[in-house]
Image (cartoon, rainbow, N blue to C red; front, side, top):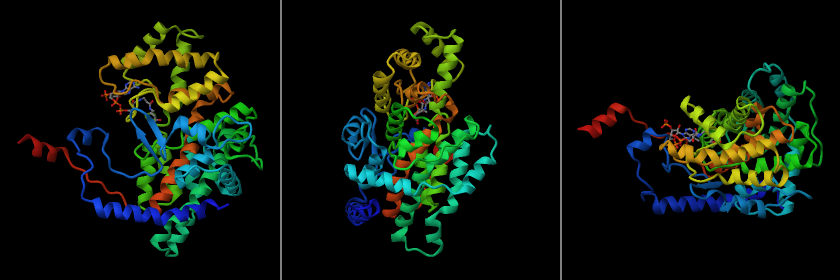
Length: 434
Ligand code: CMX
């Protein structure tokens, strides 16, 4: 049974040769054209980076190393008695490019447990932050503090050769993934449970230990965390959190600096913070409409009011997807199985019926369908996690799996510093209006 690092090392040479041959044989081929509109609209659809871990298809959704989300739920190993794949398996698949065996996954769980001890100075840093500070800000600061542990920074200082960068980046990445649940749980218990912290438990998988440290013992909640950690892990390279991490990492900033940058992007309301915004919006709708389950007509009116006040409907729309997000569907299936009569789930379902035609009628929204964030919050609320301004931190812990697998590959393949070109409006006007 080979350890993950050894297995990864065996993949490097073959991949370096593949990339070298591809670029030397076809380097001058044109892969797309860029319109002026694309430059002014957030580079939509502009193919400009390589991300080995996953690929997003607008009509089908995400594929991780070729596997769709429903396939992933079928083929990845599960914990005993669990109905959900173990996210450790997802990490293995993204990093190695092959399906893991149960033993491969077990080895990762053990390895993450061994690496999970968080130095006390990180807790001290968190303890010195005001509790009123948003949990995502605390999370990002704690990750930066942990940077003191960076093996890559040490190796770089001591003059490590370029071809070996990946090795210390691998160490940093695994260490970071291992420690994040403890940091996230610490922030949660400090903010909402009077600093009553729960120590990690030995012998649990990554998600089960996370659920335990958060203070939840229900096995359905543990399975929800396994599902959550699996489906939020990666969404190819262009989303804000992955792209920000990739960009910062390209300057040879270490895994901690890169991931913290990504988390600052995830904390934006158009990206990961949308999961908190969805719950806030649903609860205010319920409150404004007198509680209980509002009718379709009442929901439609409320949606229109939100749009008329110049706000977006959180949890709907996507920059790439053009259909219901399969990550939404996976969570809906979980809800149909475990909480079919829950009032907030019924509200989410009703909102799903009502919102798309209204967004379509605006004539400008390109994707009126729900995304991953439209569903995740109500599942957590159901199991008693009511502090919804913490929800994006959960997203962040999961995202570490994809972002770190991407970073290890970037260093193994010797990806250069990113430096796209930019222009000015004056130049564009001169170019096209004469
Ligand atoms: N509600 C209201 N208006 C919306 C909308 C929504 N849910 N989604 C898009 N629009 C609007 C845009 O704001 C834009 O309006 P303007 O032309 O007035 O600026 C117009 O429709 C066209 O936008 P688009 O091309 O369809 O969407 P973008 O690629 O620009 O933006 C996204 C994508 C996700 C930011 C947008 O759909 C949105 O704001 N959704 C709500 C927030 C959300 O759920 N974000 C989470 C996304 C998933 C994730 O990253 O976690």
